[in-house]
Length: 182
Image (cartoon, rainbow, N blue to C red):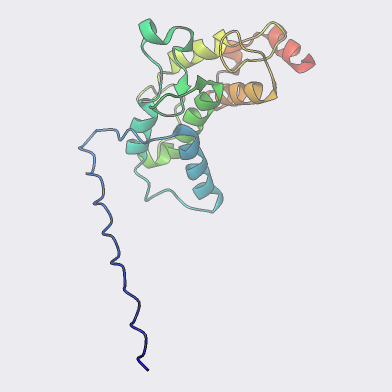
């Protein structure tokens, strides 16, 4: 009797070539703000110094996600979208943007203390205008202007303001008391 023929091996497909590297200053459109936030904070949690992260490139990507076209963005002007392709824009991504900026500050500005007023990558004036527009009648913050206040939107809004040192710029003493009652 004849021995069986060896199985035919299917050739391994050749993987596609990697996409071309971005040109200097070019932003790759694949950035996702929430995932960037999670990645950067995970690295910090694991004790990474972020010295191998190109903070300026990441922040250029973050900058590209801020809604700064007043004629098109309307009430979302100053907020951040999560990514470039059909995305939500709300308070969550504002928090992600300032948290990433704060975390990467030392990679972009070695030795310099964090400067919340620096507008190189985030238009803080527009961002604070958006947060102010999200204040609600009950002392909370909505995810977007006219949105219902809830714990998540309040946390991300307040954390955004705290990182920027701007709580007192947005909330009066009376509003802070109403928020505590809320």
